Image (cartoon, rainbow, N blue to C red; front, side):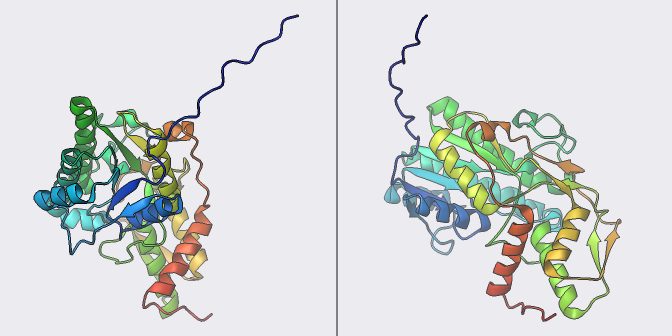
Length: 330
């Protein structure tokens, strides 16, 4: 009988982001940046921020000067011009040019300032309109984009290529990630520029408050979307900074989707609205389905923790508390 002898002791995996690292979070007041700031702080890192009024990230010269002075160990690029279908369709020039300038300024500035780690956050809209479902990272640049947000998507694709190019040419430890649709505390509830979930929360809240018999929503309600709470995203970002150093982007999602119609019914229930839901099919639907393949992220040990209904309820409560919207008395 033979006995297997234990092998040599294994060295613990050294995180790519050292404990107590100085991390510049670009876009720290937005939905994503504020969540990343909270998660990094809770993990013991020193977070560096700069308000937009003090530093316009589209200004490459000033951004480089700031990074050289601040000397962060890592940068999380969460700053971006974002919005829903209507905003993207109305202001394509701003969505293209502002995002290109921010990315060029921050990524090139980080490299020139000697920043060791960088995480660029993109968007799942970089993938083709009719990509295979769930969408693997390899689907990038394999087909036409969704026309309603093409300008924004092209800017984000340029960011992915920029990060990859810095890795190839300079050996920079820079990575990119593609989050799915996000929501949570800090979201934008402006009906002209918001994404679908906060817009639904506000529409149903106001309909209940005003006693409206029906709420009319864009499209058919049939497109399917995936939603991830922003605190789960922040946990994934920290995990990637600590453990991932690959050239390919990483999808960040929960691996489950639902139709916009089902989402509307869920938000209707959370807000307590009892009227009808009607659909304006003259308005665009956008991409028919967008579910990310999260195999690569799951292999690193990531599991989302916040159920969608709980997350929507928490986001609704956050908005009521911080906005001028009075709670509705039953």
